[in-house]
Length: 73
Image (cartoon, rainbow, N blue to C red; front, side, top):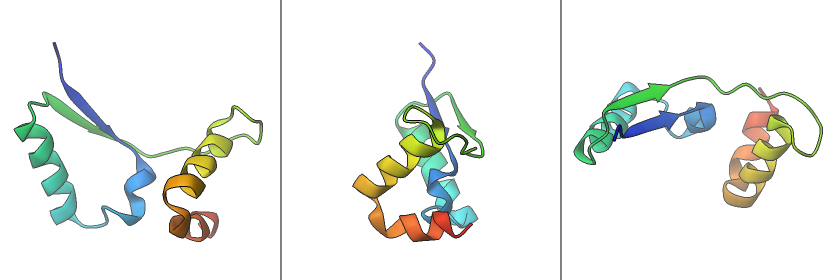
């Protein structure tokens, strides 16, 4: 079984240094990850099931302090 970690732009304000990214990758390795895929998050759409809507609902629930930062991008 291939173990993997996907990291998206959600971490923009949490992983903003190479040291933090390196720590995340090394932790994934310690847990047996075979690879790490880091990509950019693309927010689109305004419908109930669209990526942008769902992402902001997630932020509002779990990280409300980040909402103004993301809306300011």
